[in-house]
Amino acid sequence: MLDLKYTYLTLPSLFHSLTKPSSFPKPEIFLSNNQLYKKFNLSIRNKDKLLDIILDEKYHEKSFAQAYAGHQFGHFTKLGDGRAIIIGEYLTKINNRVDIQLKGAGITEYSRNGDGKATLRSMLREYLISEAMYYLNIPTSRSLAVIKTGEDIFREAKEDGGLLVRIMKSHIRVGTFEYASYFSSVNDLKKLTYYTIARLCPELKDKENPPLELLNFVMHKQIELVINWMRIGFIHGVMNTDNTSISGESFDYGPCAFINSYDPYKVYSSIDFNGRYSFGNQAKIIKWNIARFAESLLPLINHNKEKSIILAQSVLDKFDEIWREKYYLMMLKKIGINSNKEKLYPLVDDLLYIMKKNNLDFTNTFFSLSYENFKTSNIIINIDFIKWKKRRDHIIRKSNSIKDSMLTMKKSNPIVIPRNNLVHKAIEDAVNGDTALINKLLGLYSNPYKYKDGLDEFMTPPSSDFEKCFQTYCGT
Ligand code: AMP
Ligand code: MG
Image (cartoon, rainbow, N blue to C red; front, top):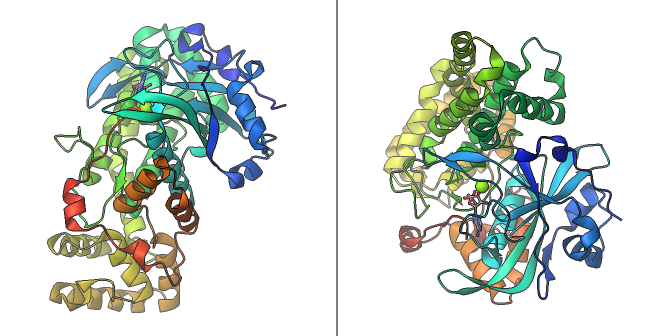
């Protein structure tokens, strides 16, 4: 029997709503994550038992959906889990609390006009990408299993229904705080704040001003996270405040994608017409989202509104400097330099400029540098690049050993990333009953920093025709 806890339900009732998952006609496990069962020492290793937690009412007595709000593409909306239900919190063997959530579990109080369901296709995508992100060393929600529900889902066409069993440190998001600040009393906002601190950063509770510290904590976590996305060429695609976690984990892999040719303006999402969530805009957007978080905490930071604004602003004012320092530190590592001297920053900018001008593949350019192997790229014959590399080699010889430099690059530069064409094909195959490619990719993506023979076909970017047409979609 799985021992579940429900500390979230100690919060006032406006933050959640007890909700049972729908019953499904013929649920069957489609993908399941053995490594994760072991890691969490979950007593549901047996597949039938996993189905139990979805089907068995004894696990649904206190299952609940979370209320939240959020700025979607800049516009404030009341939201909430419209198709996700937390069946409980689980304490892992090292006493870490995680939510176990069923995504696609049916109608909740917050479903608005939606059907509360998810397609098998979209849940397979979330499973594949979230697991790839984990092994790329990005804090992320994890995927325990995808269940084919046996139900037909109606989108543009009839589709198989799917359910994702998702695990995350916590699903509390910036939007949860916005919800509290718009729709609850200051007292309830305070309860949410102190619950969050106790759960995610208990070390802050004895500080002089815990709400202000929480703002600072989340800002740092999110800067780390988004810089990590920039490192691997990841575009989240829908960085609404309701998709910005307080824990600093990436989640909700709807319209996300990985860039191929380097282009800071790149967007894949079918609805991101203005490039709000483009690759290169992610720093600005996370800063904007953190400002919304700061606004919602204002009543707690100081009882005097003006003082509160000054204090919150003093945290936000540090964003640009922290970002710049951490971003260049990360990028310099990608080119093999383990130092963070400001005078080296143009070296990074110049390489990106050359990459953009020559349409160079982001991942493969850095791979070529890490392995001194330029056969996969036309970069080595580019005169700008040759000059750039001479400059960089000179700096490496002066600062650290070539061996250290290679090691640094190999840790920073993944070799295999989920290429859009492969992800697309693997999912198409899987929904048509052939899971060979998705399983192959899950295997490859679990070791993304190590080069070995036979990887080349998985490192090749999609054709430019594919890239021109490829689009991603939200919430399918
Ligand atoms: P997302 O873009 O997936 O983060 O979802 C944004 C909001 O839409 C959240 O409140 C979701 O719960 C809700 N939502 C997405 N798809 C559905 C659906 N099929 N039924 C009900 N609500 C949904
Ligand atoms: Mg979401």
